[in-house]
Image (cartoon, rainbow, N blue to C red):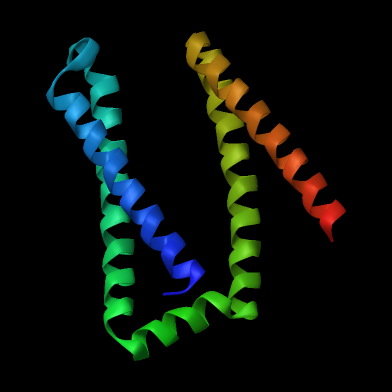
Length: 143
């Protein structure tokens, strides 16, 4: 098993573990989270999404490790430069769209007097842009 497949395996197991811990947090009603319907439904949706992603990735990795043909196909897919270039471009566009949507939602919340949500979204946008700037600077220096 090569390094990238091991990374995917570890990532999927972590996703499943986080989802299970989150579901247990909801079931055990720690800190009275079930009293707030909006928050508990958000947390349940988060847990189900993470659980689904973890299960699908784990299935793909297990299927690839059982068959040498599937393992080579997965390895070639992960190392294909054209696909990696397309993936990088898609991630860049997705990042820009998500920051733009967060800004729109933050303004909408501010105009509808949901100041606390607007404040947290603004802080999330600032954190994303700072992290983007740091990562961009590090990658630029290394290349």
